[in-house]
Amino acid sequence: MAEVVEPAHVLYETMGLERIVSLDPAGRAVLEYNAGLHLCHSGGVVQGGFITGWIDAAMAHAAVAMNGPEVTPMSLELKVSFFAPTRPGKVIAEGWVVRAGRRTGFFEGELRDSAGTMLAKASSTIMMMDKRKVEAAAQAAVA
Image 1: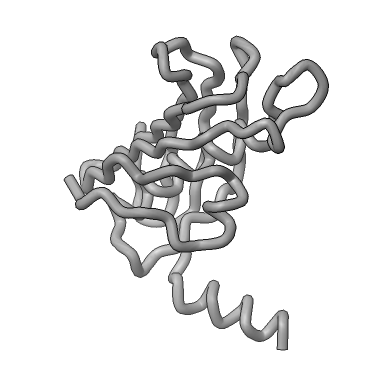
Image 2: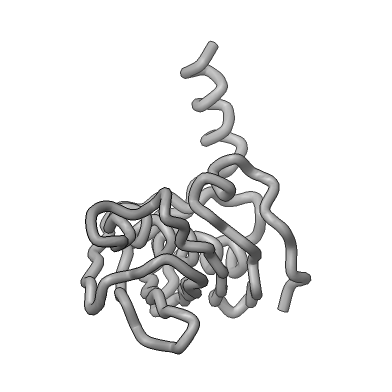
């Protein structure tokens, strides 16, 4: 398992990432988030896009843990099922590989609250892209 690291990226701060709990080269990742009130809509329920993003990020981290830092995982397809409302507080997103091909992988993930209640589950098809090419295209787009 990889060393626990703190988030450094603004996106992680926006999403409420507290820490990356674990990265397993076998294709598994666990991330801990703080579901703040600023992520909620009416009734103190976290907006579904943040929930989707948390699980998607866990699956992407699992893909990087398995394939190395020279890849950028790109979601080709993403399906999320919501089982219970997500309320403010600590939540844990976990992602894992189901099947890995040469360039494409199939992943699953879930979100649980601090009591272990499953809040949402997702599946995704992810394509592994060369990180250098992805970053070069992004630089060209903003230039």
